[in-house]
Length: 193
Image (cartoon, rainbow, N blue to C red):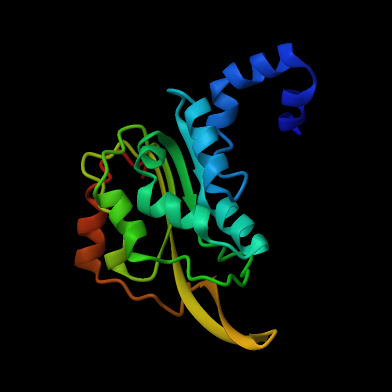
């Protein structure tokens, strides 16, 4: 892929390192806090594409949630630079992860940030309290996916590990309070209806 071009020669590396858009669009490509910080610094002022699903999948493969935890706890700059955020919790793939992706801190990431670049948001919610409240949001495209969380325990070696899977929950819940849902959606004034 595109990353191989960095290693062709010094001239190509200079060009690729200076091309901020490619780094901004691939911040979540590798489930490593250090690589995400590197990509973030190389993205300079370019609006970012934050594909948390890609990050969750990578973290599940290596069985280490450090990069995901960093992104939702300390990655304020990451969210502030984002033009597009996708976070379905992999509910369409129903991948088992050795960590629960759904955290209170994720919702807080939205409510404690000024996301003035964000125009596209795909977000998963267990109930109306999970819908992020973005004040004066510029979001034009909003997709909220109702999810349910299942937890499993499996023996791995000599001990049991808890695995989590999120799945779409249309028709089975979650149940939203209409007033709370309309209140939350009222923050998205620019969403195309």
